[in-house]
Structure formats: C-alpha cells, structure tokens
Length: 392
Image (cartoon, rainbow, N blue to C red; front, top):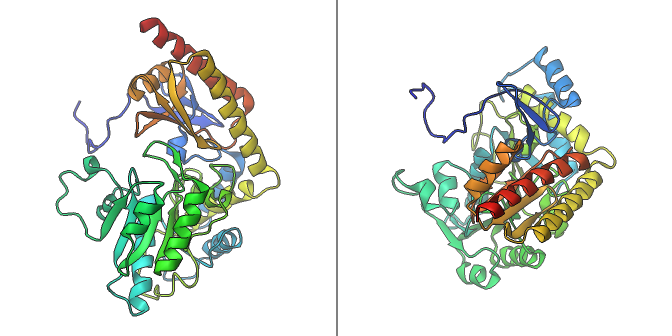
C-alpha cells in the first residue's frame, strides 16, 4: 500500500474514531478495552469530562503565543509541579525525548557553569530507553534503534541495571550525570530496587554528579504515587516527564532543583511550542484529577487488584507467563510464547496491549480503570491462555 505518511511504523490495521473511558471504538464498529493507553499516555482514559472541558475552554480563548511572553497557565502548572515534587524550577517542551534532551543539557551545563567543563560523561543503564533523538538514542541501550543514523553523540556509557558495583566502578571526575528510569518501560518493565536507587543517590553525591530520573513513562501516577521515585524516598536533581502529563495532549517537562538548573540562563535552551496555553490547560486538568483526595489511593488499589488477578490467571495457566513484573498500573508479562503472538491474540479478544523488550507484553490501563474492566481484561487473557495451551 502506497502512503503519503512516512512508513516508520509497523501499523496494525485498525483505525479508531472515538474513545470513552477505558474503551476505544474502531471505524468498523468494534469496541476494544484499551490497556495500552497510547503507551501510558492517556492517563485519564479517553474523553475524560474534566479534561475535555478545560481544553475546550482554553481552545476558545488562546492556543499559542510563544515563550517571548509570560504565560499564566504555564506558571500555574510549574508552581503545581514544584509544590508536589523535589523541584524548584520547570522547563516545558512537547515530548519525552525532548524532556530527556533538556535534562541532559541541564546536567552538562550545570558543570560547565561551575567551572568543570570536562564533566560531560553520562552513565546510563542496560535495557534503557530514553527517546529517539540522536542524543537520547545514545543514552538508551538499543543498537537496533541506532542502526543507520551515523556517528553516535559521544559521552555515554552503559552499566548493568541494578548493579551498584558496576556503576561505582564507572564513576569518575568526568561524570556529569547518572541517568535512570526508576521503572524501565520499553526495556520490559523492570522496577529498580529501592536499595539500588539509594545507592545511586549516594554515588552521585560522592562523585559530584547529578542524578537524573526519566519518569516519562513511570511518572504521573502510573505506579500509584505521583512520581515513581517516591516509593524509594530518593529524590533526583533533574527529572524528565511527558506521556501522562497531558493525558494525551503533547506536553513534556524538565523538572530540576535550583542548584541543578543554575546554568540554564536566558538563551541556553528553548522551545517554540513548549508550555503553550493549550498544553498547559491539558496538564493542569490532569493534575486537578490526580491531586484530588483519594485518586492515587485508588490507583494503588487497582494496581493491587490487577497484580492479584494476573497471579491467579498465572496459577491456573502456568505455561502462559514466565514472570509478572511491575508496579501499580505499569505491568510487564514475560510470556513463554512470543509477545507478538500474545498481543495479537489478545487484540482478537478485544484487549489492546503493547509489547516491550525481554519478550514482555505491557499492560498500561488508564489510571481510572475499574475492577470490572480489569476482570474483563483477565477474561481475555484467560481465553488466550486456553488457545495457546490447545495449540501446544
């Protein structure tokens, strides 16, 4: 099929024309339970009434003015993000890759501004994924994604995820930052051990490096707390956000302490669209819901229900999954069968999921998912288990 859209995606032959809550409706009339959420992006599901209302109201007033001027909606969003995190300051952009690019620039510029221009090396982890730009591909750990794009930007080194000894051995007086996802997403849903995160914080402090967390996928309530780092009680110096921040509307952010961002002065970084009134209206609407009393407690409860239900299915069908990993509503199922076969069969049963590394299938339902919807997803998984057992 000839298409005017550049063929960079291996698309599934489905198109959707509307969504409601946890469900998507295809143009051919089929209904699907969406446990992919636009890859952890539609954090409040589809057509959430409050998000729709706030975006519609903003659309009728003002879309874009550029960062040449003060933007009240942006200031309010920055204030709220700082009030509810470790950060003192925020830079707004449009995507997760941009947020990670910004975070890397903040880290390197911090050392440059403090008289240590040779501190450029970044220590990242095996299986990491930080975006598709040239720099974030170098921060990530996939040769497949880097193939064919020429020389890699230098200054990036990878050590095994979870191994403090290897991390400490790689440190030196030329290290600008340690970069890590508190829960690896694309790599296969691997939560970092709390002791490991504390060890990273200690190593960064000891060697004078900054600690950068990539919470593009695991942030914004996905694990049951607003930020995944809260579970370990370890705060970074810099953090990248996107995906769930806008509930499906494109918006990213770089959060930082005042100290870490001390090198970022006028002219050092910018974004034409970043933090425009529409994006900030969407993100503020998402925060209205997530910061409401009881919302994150409900996410924790739904996560526990999901993990318990998956464990029960796994016990009844021991040949289906090798391992169930994750935190909250960010779950990875490592199957015995190929993950492509599992998610195709699940889609045939009306359940949308997404693949990941290590032969995992990701379950990323909206944070508003109900127990009955989780039960519906389990019925689809159970049906696929029966099909795979019959075919064995």
